[in-house]
Structures are given as structure tokens and as C-alpha cells.
Image: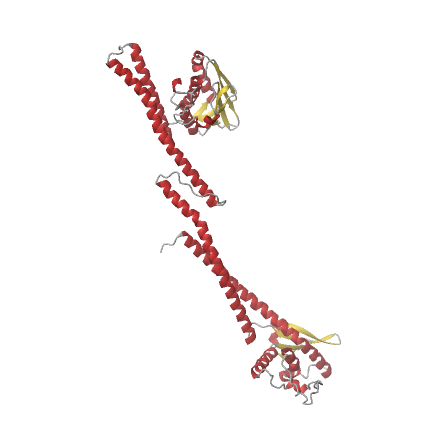
Amino acid sequence: MKLRLWQRLFLTFAAISSLALAAFVIWQQQTFRKGFLGYLDEVALERLQPVSERLAIAYSENGGWTFLRGDPRAFADLIEPDLRRGQRIPRHRPPLDRSGSDDEPPPPRDDDWRRPPPPRHGPERARRAHLAELNLLSRLLLVDARGLPVVGDPEIAGAAASLPIEVDGQTVGTLYLRRLPQLRGDTDLSFARDQLRNALIACVAILAMALLLAFALARWLLDPVRELAAGTRALAEGDYGRRVGDRRGDELGELARDFNHLAHTLEQHRESRRRWGADIAHELRTPLSVLRGEIQALQDGIREVTPSALNSLNAECERIGSLVEDLYQLSLADAGALEYTFEPVDLGELLHEAVDLQKNGFADAGLELGLAMHGDARVRGDTRRLGQLVDNLLANSRRYTASPGRVRVTLEDDADSVSMVIEDSAPGVPEADLPRLFDRLFRVDPSRNRDAGGAGLGLAICRAIVLAHGGSIGAAASTLGGLRIEVRLPALARGP
């Protein structure tokens, strides 16, 4: 069976929670048993305090431990009253005086401690108390001042708590209590089972709540994933207007924002492609219509076949050829098929040659062309493509700058890049149109239009060349009153 992602997350969380709770229960039980055994040992030591005092008195009365040495029965008879007192076994009380006297009965004799009557709670409690008493006796070891065993198992001293027995400020012996290795008494075992049961109930309740939270968390985490999956299918079907919720502040929210950005980009590309086709058709329709009209006029005899008419036809053909060539160059750039031969290029020398070649053309257009270079502007690039870049930028300024006017070219370099800036005088470009200057077939109306002779592809080709060289190109308003275009290219690494 194929599990969905939220089911895998849920089962993983459930398995981890179950293992964690199981480990906690095991640790808790071990800790509890260890602590409870320690507590029982401490309680037993408190019960043995009167025993140590009775042993000290017996030592003084008998002048040593000879009366107990090797005699477990005598040892048990001696300390049995104190052990029973610690067990809180009900004492035998004589019947009340029928006369209704409230006088307290006389204190019990030693014989009463040695042979207590069955308690009011029945023989079962007496049996348990007797077993506990025997268990405690079997855990005791008495040694003299030299550490020699008096009564009890000598091995007890290795793992036991101890009580000193002092007479007149001197230690005459030590009473050892062997620590409990495990729970034995029915009451203790019942208490431990109750604790285990309560811990298991608590763990089951915690696990149930954790699983509910895990289920809700898994669904909450994966709801955006399902929405993204549906959005991706919509994009694959061409629905680029599809958007998903992106208000989350986590990685899924970031992924949703990236998805929306992708959808927006695809939508823009589709619109650009539609405009691109329409604009190409429009650009070709105009010169073709002019060409068709002139040819038809020649065919109908309206115009005579003269050199002027043939020159007009040739101009329209050149215009169509230039447009087709530009479109071809852009299509190659989009496909990454433009050929580049990268080598060290002195951009200053290349720019100086281009300015010298076009200076007369600028002068004929009533424009002043100036060049200022600062530093060594060497880059790694394709000489032919960089020359095409410079020619297109200069031609763009010459075509759209009003006469009289100025065009200023500045070349600077720094440690990492080379900057080439071309500025011209009025007319300028509206600020809202600056980001679109490098779009294909884009023109600024009315001053920079088709009548100036361009198809709106020159700057798009410039951007493709700059990007292929790892640089950047941007447009801004010029201080001369027109347009400022800045090209930045990575500088060629200088030798040591």
C-alpha cells in the first residue's frame, strides 16, 4: 500500500513518540525502584535505632557480646520487641473494667512483647508482619569493635548500611543492615505495580494527545504542499494566472512566494511572446506594404522605372533585411547559439576607434561627440560583439538625440569592473519607460519612434551581448537632459 506523505509523517511522529514514552517508562520505573528501595532502607534504619540502643544496654549489662555470639535465637529474642514496635503491630490490651472505669491498663510485661496475641485485623496481617520481621532479621549483621562477626551473615557487611553501637562514648560494635536488592513484600510490590499502572495510563493519555497533535500538524504542514501541487499542475496546463497562499513565515511560505513569482514570470513571458509575434508582424507589415505599393505602382505604370524609384525599393528591402537580421541575432541569443571568441580586449582602444569612425556622422547630425577615458580598461570578451555593442549604443544616441545636441562617452575602471557610460542631451525618456528600454520592439512615443529609423531591437541586442560577457546594463536619466546608459563588464585580472 502506498502511503501519502502526511501519513508517513504521522506514523513517523507516532513511532518516535511511542519509543520516547517507552524509554521514559523504563527509566522512570528503574529510577522509582532504586529510589523506593533506598527509601525502604532508610525506614528500616530508623526502625533499627531503638535496636541499637537496646543492644548497647545489653552489652553493658553482660559486659560484652559473648552472650550473643553465634546465637541467632538469642539475638532475635533480644531485638524482637523493638522490631515489632517498628512494625506497629497492635498490642494486646486487657478487657475494659466492666465497672466502666476509664483507668489506663497496666503497661505490658516483656512476656507480652515476646508472645503477642493475634491482632484485631486477623491472622493474615499478623502473618505478614511476622514475615517482614523475619526478613529484616535476615538482613542484620552484628560485629564487635574489632569488626569480628557476633551474629549474622558476614557477607552482609559488603553492601550494607550501618549503625554504630556506643557505650559511654565508645563504639563497641556495629549493626549492619543489608540493602534490599529488590522489592519483596506484597505491599511494596503492590505499590510498585500501582505506580507502573499509573505511569502507563499517563503515557497512553500523553501518546493519544501527541498523536492528535501530530495528525493536525501533519495536515497543517501538508495543506500548502497540496495547494502547491495543484498550482503546479495548473501551470503545466498553461494557467499562468494561478496563485497560492503565501502568508506563512516559514520555508513553505517562502516556497509559495517563489511559486507565485514563477507563475508571474511565466505569465509575463507568455504576454511578451504574444506581443513579440504581434510586433514582428506589425514591423514587417509596414515596409512590406510600402514595397508592395511601390512595385504595384511601377507595374501599373503610375510610376516610371527610374533610379530614384529603384533606390526607394532598395531602401525598403534593406530595412526589411536589417529587421530580419536583428531578429535572427536575438533568436540566436535566446538559444545561446551566438558565437563568442573570448580574448583580452582593450575596451578603451575599441571605443576610441568607434568614436573616430562615427564622429563625422554625429557632426552631420548636428551633434557633438566627446570621449573621456580614465585608467586601463581591459576586459575578456569577443572583439566583434563588443564592437557591435558600442556601435549600437552610439547609433541609438545619434538617432534619437535632437539637433543641436551633445553625446558624451566616459570609460572608467576600478579593481573589479570596467564602466562605460554613454549620455546624450534632450529629448529624455520618461522614468516609467526606463526599465522597458531593453525590451524587444519597445519604443518611447512620441519622440523616439519608428520614423527615426529603428525597429526597437538595438538595445535588446546590446543587453544580450552584455549578459553573455557576464556584465550588466542599465538606463537612467542623464544630467545632459537625455538618456544615460551604463555598461559594466568584469575587468581583466591584472598580473602581479
